[in-house]
Length: 563
Length: 57
Image (tube, rainbow over all chains, first blue to last red; front, side):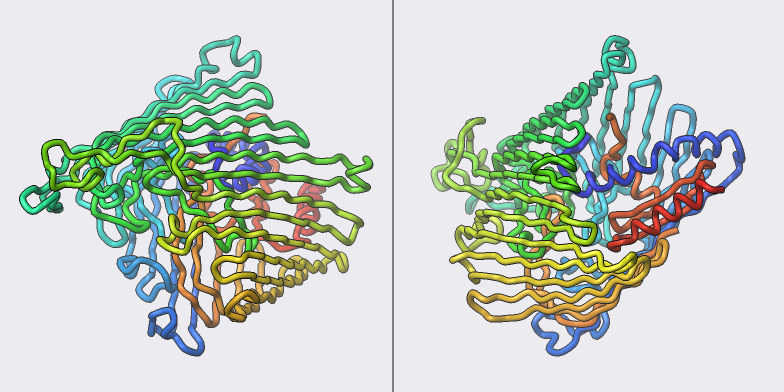
């Protein structure tokens, strides 16, 4: 369904491996022990103990932690779950209201023949998330569940209906606005035999979301004598169609939103639009992805006066690659809330083993291109009020032609990666990237940063259970802080131990070092990591959503377990 | 192949998975026989050993 988010793609792979074996499991469970209750859950605790000067990250707490514990119980008819979070002394860089502790997540779900009813908190997504997506992303401090009721219906084969209502969580409170929404998806191939028999799958979807937010909480002045008449109801809708045939898949999705003056759009009254086309071709050893998306005035929050990462009702998927290598992610792009044209193309190819280019073990090549551009906008005048400037609060903001491009490039990334195993004991992956990052647009100032990045990632199998992985990275730029170097060595003693040392060094301007050393112990579903690191200030991003993290220095302990 | 992405990570949440990658081996009876949290180079050897052990049962 979603081609866009890297995390999903990783998960997709994991799910594919286990599902063929897991399907009989469900049948066995149902026909067998009907009273059986399955309990699962997880514990995650990240601890930081600052060393040296702590003023740099504006915190005086000696020990900080983000700790979560979650338990879910599942049975044939009823599921229930609860999560405890302790964030009273949180890790640095989260929004102020993130601090606190308690039980932010709890639910009971009844499962009947064709219906599923949830009471309590829940997460959901309609289509690609243009008008509705609530989720938890701990690294970003996002947990914007809805507290209320949700019904999912599957009345006949191939028809999926969801309806929900409630209020959205914003850290330790709930925003006052009522959110109501519904989504329907039809799998046409379930009814039209020729489709299914020709291996063609067609899915149509439509959804609608309504926000009811009283205007009494916000008083916004348009000029000295006029206050804005804020709409109590905001409606948004989304339609989509996906066709899959053999290796081909095409997804077309369109969403629009009514007048929704907010802090994000400067309290303007224009409508919002998103259109997306995503096409992919995938067969063994070859994949191609082409995508284009135009978003326009589509920030949708459950509280109109909010900025930052909280209170988002929707999610516009990122069309730029989420990089994991340190220097590749030094200048990460965050989806622009006001609007952009975004394009992405990705090509992957596997040269088979025992061919001229593939060599003895085969070779993988991946090329990715993404470009994000401003919309061409013309500010709208306020009819009859000469004191109000065009595009100012109270006006429609701007008009823009669908195909028009503005003057700014927001971001561009061209990268190529080649991965090849040379022998049983040596594998090498090299990457080159050419990035343009419009720091002014993403961060507010700093101009355009043009960088070339080179990365070599080498894997040495030293013994049956001993592996050494090294990374060398170089980022060259004449802009901002100039050149950066990064080196990492990671020794794995399978199956339990991993030792990591790294250093990030600014050779261009500041001469500062940001070293780190970690020990990781892994056994089954337990993972414990401990170390010391100095991390530079920067943005931590996932799926086009970013969080600023200040510079930190200290002992870091991280424990993760699930059952 | 038509596969099984779960939008918004519902599947991940149902299993209580926090870190990706996460590997599960499910045996012929549908029971989870092995879990591995996170990634360690070379841990795939442990994986294949476990699969062999389950197959020999």
